[in-house]
Length: 135
Length: 92
Length: 286
Image (cartoon, each protein chain N blue to C red):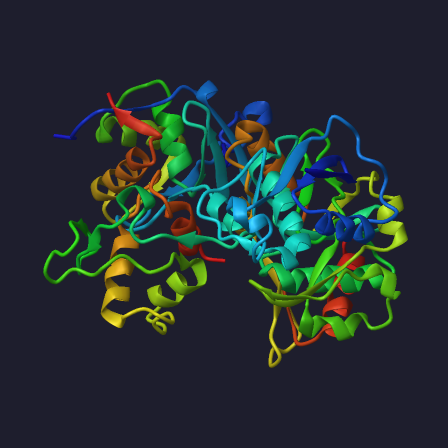
């Protein structure tokens, strides 16, 4: 490992061995960085991705203001997005950018919350994950 | 009272490469790569295949190093928590 | 299904398409490349987005040995781009014989420079420019690091150039340029075929001697800053699509690279400055 340690016995037993200093670090310090895969960043960025809201297996359901999927017609909830949202549109919405053409502003916010709840395996997740990675 | 005992995987379970003052570590059981700053690699060495609580750990490290710290117990606890979160040490 | 086989560096692709036209464009763009080695490493397919989309407002989806869900269909007019994206996708998801770095590479005298960290078009332009100024172009999208030899292996694909960058290449022979493609996710682009030297020498690897993190800005002053090896390591893990999949061999290859090769961040305001910085820093690695 990395810490150099010159405590090996000196030749002819002359010089005393010196121990290396080791700081334990402040309690709040960070000494371990775990490498996380960056797959989505480079692979999906080479493609034009899109996210259907809600996913095809939930087609027809409405999206509540908090992003959860609810039965159609639920009061206060929004109808499904008329078309899938492109990666660019979602990125803009995530950064408080303009509402994509053809979408209601409040509905768009609900869609963003829905997208934020996507997990691996759900349609649109790979696209969403790729938007999160810093470029 | 020095808290729980921790243990790290034996030396064959990891592969390390020194990169300047840091250590790149490949953890074979999980396939995960970590970058460690001192004293993390030294703690892993002291616990490799040998369980110990925070006190035992400090004693082992004092055999090889002059430890510098304003607050050794909290510092060691913090380092162990980081290593546990990374999956490099576990409770023994 | 129409077919075309193509070899780029050590990788052979089989591209199938429901339409002939994109393959004709691809064949012209890659004129002069060596024949594919069959069986091909990867297959790309351009298929109608829906059955009727073969004929009505034709649009295609990109698929192949490896594919991703959630991809938007592209119009047939961008079929050439779709084929390029499809090849990128196969490499990004399926390459296991080399550590893939999302980086451009050029070499001179067997000593290669890696350029990474920019969005695709920025480093592409710089690599292409260097290729026109006496450097051998080894690739602009993917750099292939040999797992056993630690050398960079060339993957000289056609470079995708943004419209604004095209005037920089006004001197190249028209035959090396692909069709003008409008309405792409990156705006208007054209592909540039690498020069004869890049094609003829694509099977010669080169030793990496410098890793650059270029930054372009119209008001940036020309500058060079060292980048520590640990930082280079972490940034390259983020610039690789197969580092994790390659497990310990990937770890060994990448740590070997960053401990042997210095990293530098460079700032520049135009292509001329960029080329000058690259050449100066490469000289210093002798």
